[in-house]
Image (cartoon, rainbow, N blue to C red; front, side, top):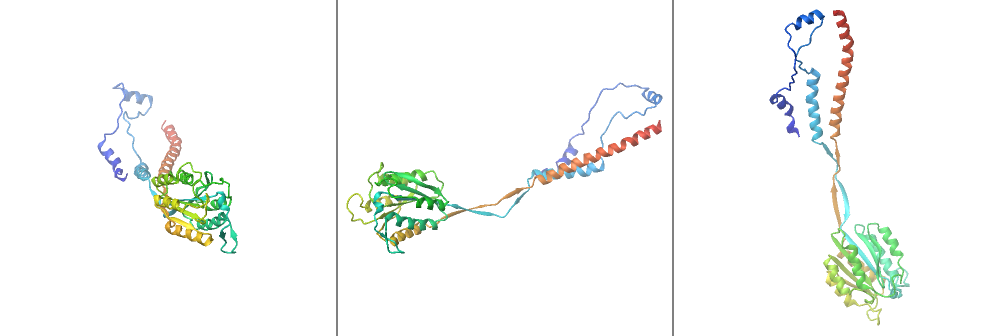
Length: 330
């Protein structure tokens, strides 16, 4: 914009002055008529002349307008904003078999049901993941979103505490839980997507086979870590299928874990997962900017307005003086 600084001088130098003409009747005795009437004729051609104040103000106004057009900006100190770089879903089995009291409380030594042990350990795990968006999936006869992916971990902990055995049905829909996780994370912008799948039984109610769901998860870039809890020697539908969980994890590039009936074992599993997926934060640096184009623009408008006000007042002061001089001449 400052390249345009010499533009007014170039226009004054190269562009011819603006002139207007009007028709007139030539009268060789016009001066005699004016003298007889006692009038002083004005010149036939009028040329507008600028005063010293205009010559001073015009370059100043031009410079101020160019400064405004150049948009001066004040760049403030950088602001760093931490953004989550990972989405983490925790899928928890709420089938009836989670009521088995085969876990021992590390603090009291008393027996507790499997879901209570899971809640204690998962709550500690969530508390450490301040930089991740975390969500919950509950599954039994079918899979349901219990908590959406969010940075509001306090709300996630409240919804975790609200989970109850059997609230999703008595059976285990393992494949549906993976499928729901894919649906919840497929459109998220996170760089990494992780599903931690915890169950104490094998798949008995899924509409989609777990292995097929694992392949779909891999296509969407989701890593699945599986945790099997309970005794693998148990007979019947409640027996945890560790081989199936291992295949699911291997398909997606995850790890398969097994926790026995102690809370410390389950806590160690989540500690291993914490090491596999360390907290990852994407930092964005933003520098706020403040526009100041309005300062020279407002100054130019104010100066121009003040000039015209002063010129108008000067004209009002000159008018009575001119009238008195004309009366004196008459």
